[in-house]
Image 1 (cartoon, one colour):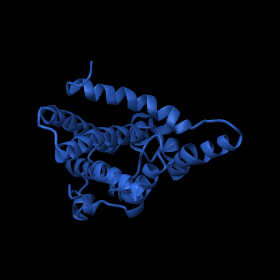
Image 2 (cartoon, rainbow, N blue to C red):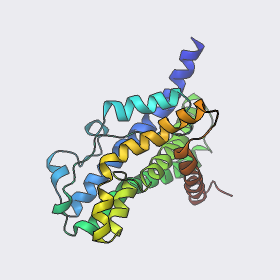
Image 3 (tube, rainbow, N blue to C red):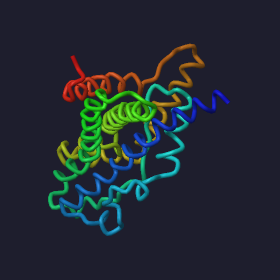
Image 4 (cartoon, helix red, strand yellow):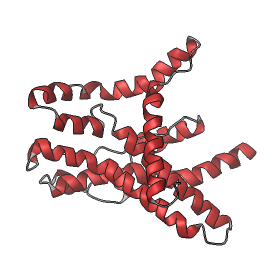
Length: 231
């Protein structure tokens, strides 16, 4: 029963931060694409900040929950991808960069907003509700910083890969974009397969964590500094 209580407590302070971070990330892609000339997402009802429209049962709920239960060094997941017809953007090569950046951008804005809300909450008399709210807001910062950093890795179809595709000369961009079909496999191998093989060989090595965690720490420190919590 104690384990169940601990699990319930963990879910109560992580569920909303993770779901809102993932779903609003996708909504921001659709909103930016709509602003830049592609109304595909809007016509399909995906330019919405209603999380239910974007939830992917496995990527939004099951996978982050499994990682949380396993005590993974970082949490990640995904919502249903927002459809973007890049050829319909007014300036496809340039605008795809802004569409890609919109997702991590809103994650950073959510993290900063949570940090600012923690300031007055810290002055409120502590009770069960304010402590629960405090933990949720702290986790909003963590979930959004991790998601923003993860998505900015330069691997297509992650947002960082899309940004790099938009920045590369056309002769290189289309070749790099071809990696998109293997992108998810690369991420899964780096996050799970390589660490598992390394453990079997007696090594503690996680290439994704080795790259991602220093990036997360830098961005997290920047968010805390901006919101008045850094030193």
